[in-house]
Length: 131
Image (tube, rainbow, N blue to C red):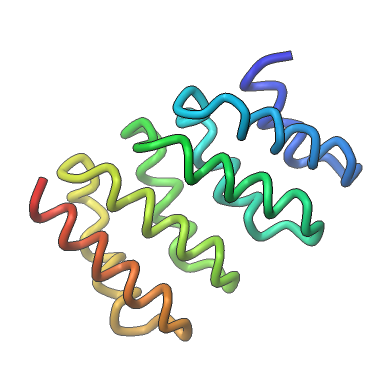
C-alpha cells in the first residue's frame, strides 16, 4: 500500500488501521507532504496514538503541495486546537503560495478561541509576506 491508501486508512473506523497508517506516513518523512491535509485532520483523531503519529509526520514532511491550500484554509476553522494549529503551520510553510489564505489567517488571528492558533496564524501571515 502506498501514500493514497494510507490516507484513506486514516479515515477508517478501525483505530488500529488509522494508527498504522499514520505511523507509515510519519516514516516517509518529506515524502508524506502530499498527505498533509489527511494528516492535519488526523491530529484531531479520538485515538492518541493516531494523533501522535500524525504530528510526527507533519513535523517531518516540510511544506505541503500548493494543491492542499484550499483544504488547509477550511481546516483553520476546526474546533480542534491541534487541527487549526497545524492548518496554520502548513499554510505558513507554503509561503507565497498561500497568499489566498491571508484573509482566513487574519480571521484566525482575531477570532480563534485558542491563543496558540492565534499566534500560529500570525506566524503564518509573516511567512507568507516574507515569501
